[in-house]
Image 1 (cartoon, rainbow, N blue to C red):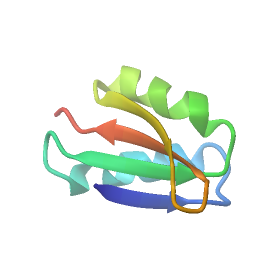
Image 2: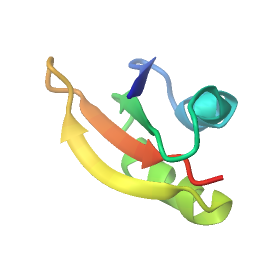
Image 3: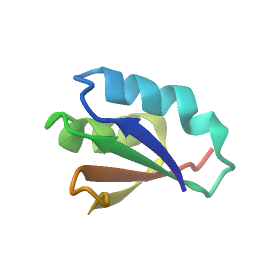
Image 4: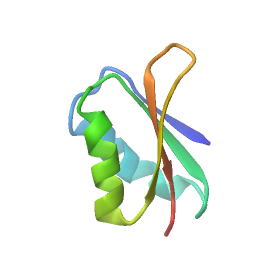
Amino acid sequence: MLELDCRGLVCPAPIIELARHVGDVEIGELLGVEATDAAARADVPAWCRMTGHAYVGEEKADDGVPRYVVRRTA
């Protein structure tokens, strides 16, 4: 899984980073967006709905920061 460290970035920067890097993984592979911005909890699933990628869910990074996991579908 490609992990994007978006700690300290505020909306819309985590989504911009996700959009910039989704093409860095093959179709079917995962990206993890590690973000401290509370808006990412709603923004990442919304971005997935708008772009057709699959929102896998939320988990915790090793340091407890939320990681939002996305599967590239196209």
